[in-house]
Image (tube, rainbow, N blue to C red; front, side, top):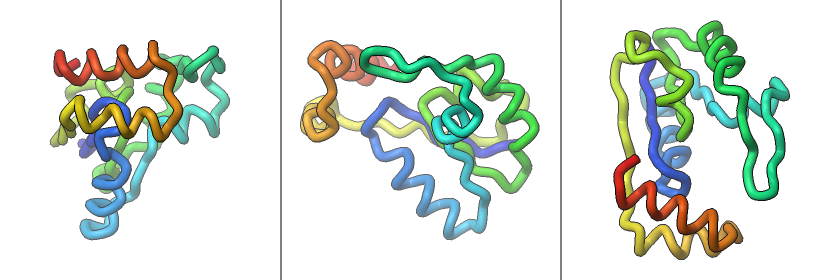
Length: 121
C-alpha cells in the first residue's frame, strides 16, 4: 500500500514530499520523473502529455510499502486499492499566481491551473 502526495502544480508537493520521505526514511517516487525517464510522454506546446496506462504499469512495479509517491497525476495512475494514505495539498489561488509567473506559465495554462485549484479538481 502506497503513500501519496498530490495536488495542483505549484502547491508544494515536492517540498513536502522530500521532507516526509527523509524523516520517515521512505523511497520518494516522482511520477513526472518516472514518465520522463521511461519516455512515455509527448511534448506539447505548453506541457508534457503522459501515457497514463503505461505509467500505471511502470509504477505498479516500482511502488512498495516503503514508497512515497508524489505528483499531480497520482489519481490517474495509482489504483485506489493500492493507496494507504493520500495527502492533497492546496494553496490559495492568489498565491499561485506568483508561482506561475515565476515558472513563466502561459496565460492559458495559468487560468487552467487556477481553475482546477478553485474547483478542487
